[in-house]
Image 1 (cartoon, rainbow, N blue to C red):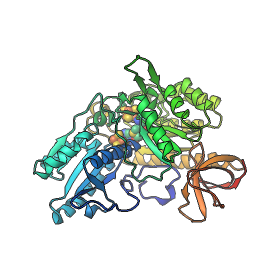
Image 2 (image 1 turned 90 degrees about the vertical axis):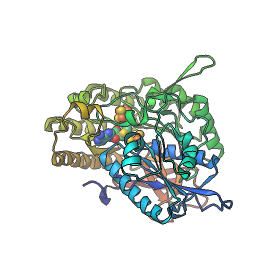
Image 3 (image 1 turned 120 degrees about the horizontal axis):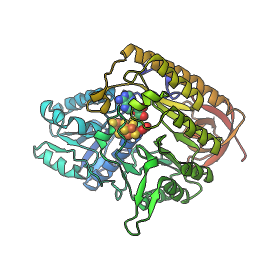
Image 4 (image 1 turned 135 degrees about the vertical axis):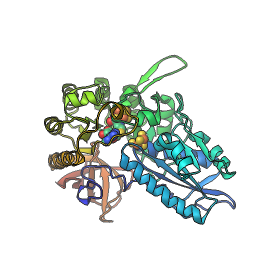
Length: 479
Ligand code: SAH
Ligand code: SF4
Ligand code: F3S
């Protein structure tokens, strides 16, 4: 119902699993040494998965594989998969069927499944359905070259071991599909939260934080290569905690963003995802202190009702969440907040659904990712609660959430008319070669006419003259 609905595009994000699956795109096909092999990779799911594909690209590069954007030219096709909702898995299955058809024409081609579905469906994919040659879970990517060689010799390869230590800290990701300006940096892996609807703790294992110095080094390296924005990634960045083995000193998330902010005032810092139970005032004050830490927080509420939140095992209630929102706006009045919402979770009543709507109005989200509940096998909710809200009701409630968010986003944007923002230029507008696009600190896209000397990767000041529900439209002004 919400998929492929063009009116929603860019405006309110209902994740469209069908449109995902961005393939790795090197700028141009590299000329490769005779006899070398090529890999093709598609990624589904969250930013974490896209970031992991860059780690995989680097590991394969070291093993002598070259990237290609042409799946037919590939010797190895990889799909980095997502299990978050049923639809995500169905999409991947369709892709696997297509890759298998290619394989029929080119039998030496290997097909591998990476990521979150690997954990869930390892045996099924390998043995019962014989859809793939290799299955590798998110903590086992270093083993990939080894598994590929095994598979070339006819041994189907599988490694889905989850680790308590692996953070790939020493791997320098191969930047895939990069605009050369913005990049992701994984700062932690796994999740210890056990929200009852969520499959991630099962597919990605225990939470662990990456060496803070390796994060700063990666950000530094990106800055020296011309990048101007890094997004620090984790399922719950606020619980980032790294203990330096040398002196037992502890780096928390507030310390980490401060360390990255010091690299250069021209390097912007974003992060995702913040958890309402863990986001501290220390983090908010650090954000306020540094101009280059973007004033934007993705703070998924999931539901606005305390009983539902308890069933979801989110460990905060409506009042707690409202207090956090209030604090954010007190400390940073110009901060934008976005959210994730799930409609129709087990036993949710109409009244309880209305609490989500009023929460959206209270928090004034600039945008949201919105879903209806999809039961995932093995999760706490699947084991404990009945998925008893009929699909039609889930969809009706979701539509109400989507409609409301569209209005709130529009109002949010209208308040920006007449304001001037510092914008990092990211490229040319999709609609017109004569326009540039960039984002402001609040993560809103701004389109403005190109003037002489404007360059991608530089900052300009743009005054907003008009808005749509999804975009700000403005013109360059002097700072
Ligand atoms: N770590 C992040 C979320 C990761 S998953 C957090 O805690 O906020 C991204 C989003 O997918 C979640 O915020 C949730 O809104 C949605 N989601 C997760 N499991 C789902 C399910 N079973 N059905 C529908 N939506 C789900
Ligand atoms: Fe899933 Fe909750 Fe962890 Fe987010 S915090 S990944 S929703 S278990
Ligand atoms: Fe999907 Fe795994 Fe991310 S289930 S949302 S790819 S952590």
